[in-house]
Image 1 (cartoon, helix red, strand yellow):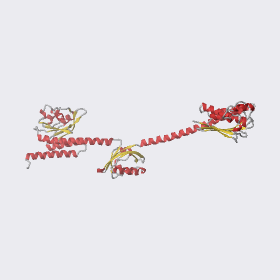
Image 2: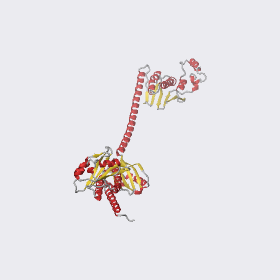
Image 3: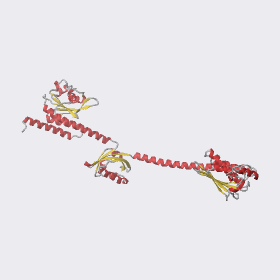
Image 4: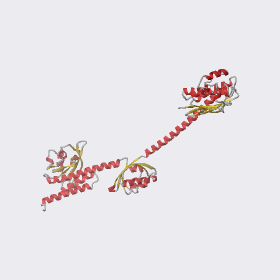
Length: 498
């Protein structure tokens, strides 16, 4: 059934208003640009003379005028200046009452309205009829649009309903643009390198951080495949990661090097996700060159420190060996000096004076045997006192045996003494110039009578020997290993170090 003429006219006007408002929004890239265009489109389409856009300042709790438009033929400078200067709280003025109610409002003549603070300016500008509508986002008023006519106009409910839908359109646009502008600010101001890349290997969009880090303009980076900027050694792995993204996977903490305009390479750490339906990759990279350099520097310092400590330890070890050798030689000199001052001087020959290997030829005299004891003590100076005492006692007993029995106290004959020191063991070797011996012939020693430890005392008395004979038996109890070479008349004893 065809519409009657008035209804058809209303429908056509509604479609026209919605169309021009939608077109004004579509042609606007920012909120500031959209406000003026929508005001003009509605005023021109509906024959109104002035329009204003008010924004809710939530932090201050007021409405502020953001934009205005009026027909060029009329002078509304005073009214517009007042609108931009004044603010409204909830319920005050035409914008305030719409903010408070969340509903459109119509005023036939604002000059006569008791709740219209700008009435003086409206009168001088010739404005009378007015209506205002809320801009809603999810039921919340975020702004108000008001329109004025030089004529007194009665309420038009159909027009209010129609413009309410336009207000919802504008509110949705405001929210969408607000989100987009926030994202744009984040994209633009981020210190990280943000980008959108295509599956075809080209960047599609870059934020300013790229130019700051690499020195290229966005146009230069967009014009060439991004792989051309990657270090040759990193291209294969970068291609592998790109293929992973093309297959729907994600990339986290991937690192590669990008060439800067000055020829240097910057290390980038990537996080990226694909959007396969649009053949697009969204990625963020962080310049980690300083971190890489710091890690390399720390590693180099660590290696240098280890090498320096090793060299220091080696120097200290060499110095310690030198000091020990000098101390050993000094002790030997003291021993020699003491022997030269005795009634039967004889020389000590030094075969080796290294701290870990001392080898001497000692004349077969008791004086020489006694004077060499400090050297033995010095070789174990860093050992526990009980170990030093044990080793010194064992060494003294075996050396006296070698001097007395093998060398027959003849100062022209020599006993060869060797001491080898490691971190784990002390080894002493004492070889005298005697013809050798067998334990069965040592009936004057306690070691030959294991079943009767004091039998040798009687034998020593019969032979007119000095008291004793417990030496070898005591030595065997004090050391860890005791080995005889009867043919060469030498003995080796071992003391293990924990």
